[in-house]
Image (cartoon, rainbow, N blue to C red; front, side):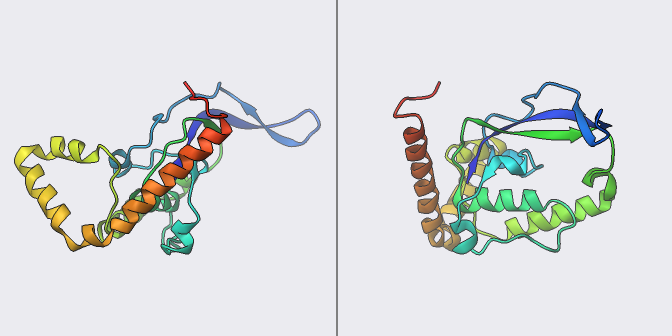
Length: 196
């Protein structure tokens, strides 16, 4: 999975001089999202606009991931988490989208109750909790810091000796393959020059 960067921009509806319904921008695009995708941070909330994510085709065709029709909200978060934890992440450090935030009108935040949001979040996390997961490089040390030394040893030994760890070796290999392909594509796009 390849997340890129997205900025946010405040907009509001207005009628243009021609009488056509349009909109007006109220702010410059702002870099409110983290420049790098963080798997563990995404477990607490969706931190990536959906239009900033490129999913590999095999996530759907070979691994069977599909949109969850039972979710009232959080369907984008569900797909983002499944992609991140099944095939891994290769950040694309380029701005590819402007996420318009409407100042007027209804949104999914106003149309659905807090209970609906909580139920959808629970369903997303329950599905993820029932799956074997691929962690990005560096996450083990972060987990260790969260758990403390003793908790880390137990969690690490349990993880690496589990049958799910052994069965998902091919998923970790697929993640590395996606990262290599993204790096090759980036190199072709930049003519072999490193981007600063």
